[in-house]
Amino acid sequence: MTYTFLELFRASNKKSLKLQNLGDTIGYFCKQFLVSIAKFAYTYTVNRITAHAVINKLEVATQHILIYINCKINPQMLVFDV
Image 1 (cartoon, rainbow, N blue to C red):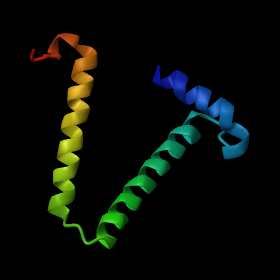
Image 2 (image 1 turned 180 degrees about the vertical axis):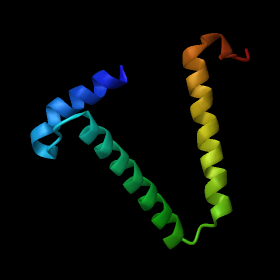
Image 3 (image 1 turned 135 degrees about the horizontal axis):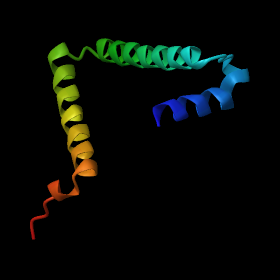
Image 4 (image 1 turned 90 degrees about the horizontal axis):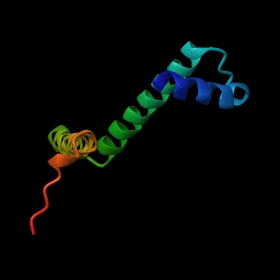
């Protein structure tokens, strides 16, 4: 599924992004990810937010993502209090 996504992305953007092969496509996504991390770090630094606060926010986000993934994989994990 990942390969198909990357190939579809490459095919639809090969002229505008000059993606010639799968390696170029993977490189493009890695570069975009690093840019996002740099913007995130810069924003928190400019706003004088401590590293400890950032780590806490990332932990909370990670927990929410893991709960979402677990519920998608195993719907029985959803428990509703009535």
